[in-house]
Every structure is written in structure tokens, then in C-alpha cells.
Length: 216
Image 1: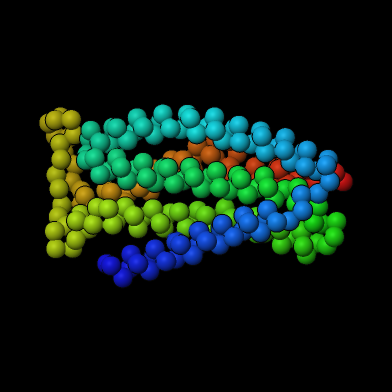
Image 2: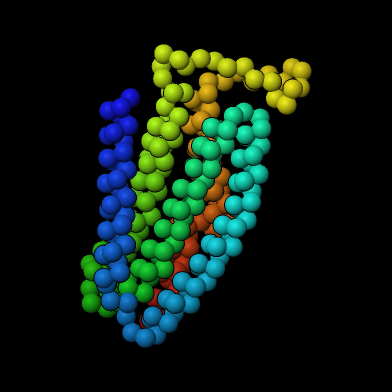
């Protein structure tokens, strides 16, 4: 298991490194004239205001769900759920940050060449994609390492637990599988919240189209 975790960790680090480099690359591009920068500023301000407001609502919901998981199952399950949801939320902020930085820069770059504009656009988009992959892999490695005792093949066993002491409400499960499932559930729940607002990719496309239409 150690080799698998180490390999997965290296892949996660590589993905996060490229995601960070993509942000750096986009930041180095020229943001255009004053009108472009002004429009980008408005879009960026609105996007961040939306993300922060959404994050506050999500935080309350996630705390409640985590507490319920703690009460029904184990504290490890709740922690795993919170780790997954927290990293998923971070991925959303990383993607939104890259999108709001790349929009005006892509619009300005297309004035010079289509190739340069596509490079800026795809690099900005790769920040989100690799950020999601890197954070999800890093989080899973961390959760498995943190609760490594539960993932020991020699001690894995099926556990039976009665929900809230209700007769007949028995659940059979493997604790390690439950921990991983909670991690995935936390990440997926945040993604569903983001979908309610239209999705990160939809917002990125809208933000790229608006300044382009306004400038051209």
C-alpha cells in the first residue's frame, strides 16, 4: 500500500504543480487595455461575491451533515466527509480564480493571433481540470494515510451497527469503504451545489464571452 500511496501522491503533486504553473502563466499575459481590465474587474468581483456567499451556505450544510455522519457512524467518517468537501470547494475557487484571470487576457491575445489566444484559454482551463484531479488524489491519499489502520488488509472486517439504537435498523459495512465513500460524498455534494449555480465551466464560458462581446 505504501508504494501505491507514494505513487498517487507524486501524481497529485505533479498535477497541482502544473495547475499552479498554469495560473502563473496566465498572470504573466497582458490583460489588455483599460476597458478590458475594467470589465474583468467587474466580472471577477461578482464571481468572487457569488462563490463566497455560496461557500457560507455550503459550510453550514456540510457541518450539519458531517455531524449526522459522526452520530450515526464514526468520527473518522465525518472527518473524511469534511476533507472531501473542503478540497472540492477549494477546487471551485481555484477554477473560478483562473477563469476570471484568463478571460480578458484571452480576449487581448486573440488580437495578436488565434494560436496565442487558444494557448491562454486552454492553459486557464487546465488549471481547473488539473486542480480537481490533483486535490482529489491528494485528499484521498491523505485520508487513507490518516486512517491507515482501517485499511490494513489483515484487520479489515465487516462491522454491524444499529442506527440510533432503533431495533432492526442494522447496517453492515466495512469501515474503510465507508471512509472512502464519505470522502467521495463530500466532494460530490459540493459539486452539486456548484451545479445549482450553473457550474464552474458554464461560468467560465460566460465570462469569456461577455468581455469578448463587449470589446469587439
